[in-house]
Image 1: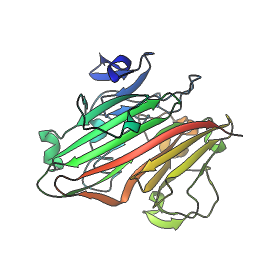
Image 2: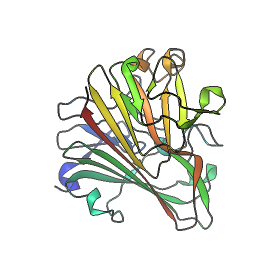
Image 3: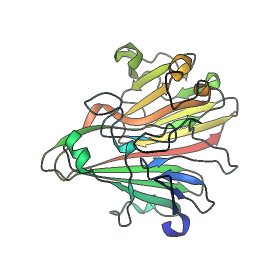
Amino acid sequence: MNQSENIAGEQRAGVEITKDKNGIEQVSLHGGQVLSWKTDRGEELLFTSSKAIFKPPAAVRGGIPICFPQFGNRGALEQHGFARNKIWVIDSNPPPLHPNDSDGKTYIDLLLKPSQEDLKVWPHSFEFRLRVALAADGYLTMISRIRNINCKPFSFSFAYHTYFSVSDISEVRVEGLETRDYLDNLYQRERFTEQGNALTFESEVDRVYLNSRDIVAVFDHEIKRTVIIRKEGLPDVVVWNPWEKKSKLLVDFGDEEYKHMLCVDGAAIEKPITLKPGEEWTGRLELSVVPST
């Protein structure tokens, strides 16, 4: 099946939502953001806050926001950059990807180019192409291609800021980060080394794991479900949960919702990506879910 048979658009409150053939909201043109990813039994795998704001220029709290060209407050731009606040367009004629990224998959291609307003705050011309693909086996793949169409180099940081839905944060563990160094944002980005075999959660966590493995797993013991995160071109992994105190400070986040979410991001943060004129960078994320014991 091709893209047009599977994905249609609907205009609502200034935000275009693309829907699959079952009418499930999946990808918003507001932010180029995946909002829903479900199992074949209809279980939602991504978290979106009940208080999320779906009106630009606010960013949507949940799903998979794209942080570009800045992660967090590591620069002069607004928190996490501007890509997650912009209205993207459907890219009807993207440059070709490998056949494996198209065959047997439902996909949509989106495009973001800087506006005159964007160029005032970040004076670099770019084309950001995003493919979101869903395979029959439920694998969700996101491929970002960022090209420098400027006459001078530029650098950026990047993250797929993935909000996973979990049954109970105290029953979750993350594997694949053991022995890795991380920058702890709760301690002025001081560098530590992960000592545990798995990461578990008893309080606020806000870390950037550096030069991590390309496969990380999130185990949800209570519902016996594991999400596998595979990444390419994304050396770092962000792990974030605001916990009780910080949750109450977030206007677009419920006071108790920290118990049912965990962000684990494929990212490029510590060493920004630098593109010369005409160069292109690709960052790929693949998510899959398997039963676990």
